Image (tube, rainbow, N blue to C red):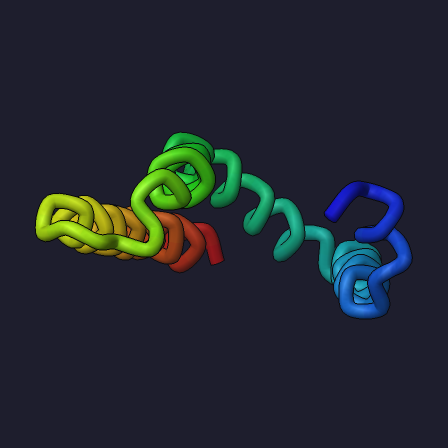
Length: 92
């Protein structure tokens, strides 16, 4: 999906509109979420890189080693998402 397709997506338009309304009505919440996402930058980058670069090379898994890589990636992504959620909870 490229940027033009994303801009035409109704769900993306709805979420952008709601984000804009929240930012106008309560900028403190928007700034807190932005700070939390900024603090979670390394975790977000790691989740994206593992899911986009590592997992496609071993999906679908055919050997026990590939199943191990997939299991480790799922655990790692879960741990990183937990860190991102903790940063969001601290910020709000």
